[in-house]
Length: 103
Image 1 (cartoon, rainbow, N blue to C red):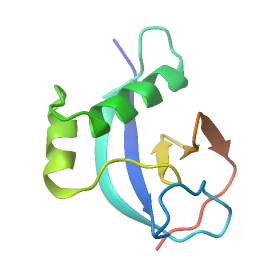
Image 2: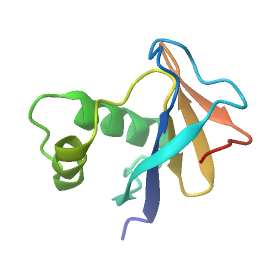
Image 3: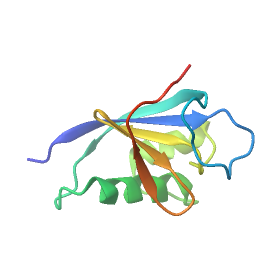
């Protein structure tokens, strides 16, 4: 049985979507769902799946379809929380965060 994780999508309130998240940026929770840990156990793999599903025109995951009905694409500067770990969506990679602030 795969471990289920609570996933929280946080949008950065900055207007410039190409700026990476910096400590103190204002975030707002826009979506929450449960996702299983990939068989390989690698959270970066799960983040890649989340990013792809939230940005492709026709996602296959039910949670991604629901997200896209109400939200913009996931962008650089946004944050994804999986369980207790927050990850910043940077230009070319995911960066683990030790703390975040949100509204």
